[in-house]
Amino acid sequence: MTPSHPKSSVDVNVSEIAGLKTQFDIFRFMKKVTEAYRARAFMVFNLPSTTAIDLQSSTVISSWPVELLAAYDQEGLVTNSPVMKRLRASTTPFFNDVSQVKLERIDGKAGFVAALFERFRMMRCAYFPTHEASGGRGAVSFSGDREAFTGEEMRELHYISTHVFDRLAEIRGYDTRVTDSLTDREIDCLNWTAAGKTSVEIAEILNLSEHTVNHYLNRATKKLDTVNRTQAVARALRIGLIK
Image 1 (tube, one colour):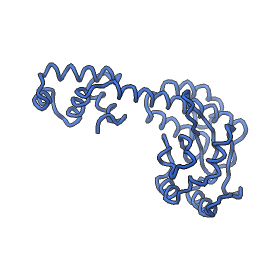
Image 2 (image 1 turned 180 degrees about the horizontal axis):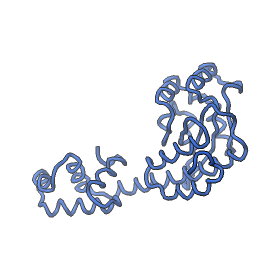
Image 3 (image 1 turned 45 degrees about the horizontal axis):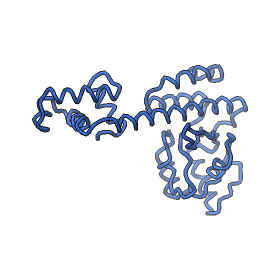
Image 4 (image 1 turned 90 degrees about the vertical axis):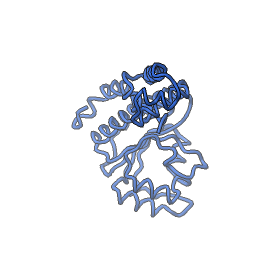
């Protein structure tokens, strides 16, 4: 994608999304889109419930500054967020400028919110409601201090956001299926491989033959859709299968 010509590359972007394999791939892609549209940060999140007390637990991927998200959650701002309320009530994308719009918060923290986002130069934000095939709802946001997105840019970003959220759901679903399909022994062998042990050493530790250990590792490698045990360990770490 060429940063100076984002409007001519929407279809290219969507084609690229289909080929992304990991959440990190999508993170890098979203960073690129954010820069191309002259925003400062993005967030992909599942729509928090009305009883949610923080935003971080609903976040899928994000480039928000760590300090901003920490302050946001420390003050419990998601609880009475007018933005979240609007996202729950409508599926229409919208642009919000906290430097101009009079925020109405029943907790009296409107001034704090405005100052917080002003501090990180993220006062202007576009929100794009999304949903996955299972019905789970979410949204994608692009924040910064540039002028309001044009109507055409809003349509382009909505299109991209829909595909990104859908692809993330597919990747998470795949990771869950992989986790469920590996046996305890296969996971044990991956864990010891990650610890730097050879097949011979793992065989001694688990009281198995070297042949059996290699069999488990080969099966795990295949199930994780990787080409060798090094890649298998890396993927298992990424999806939280081993630590």
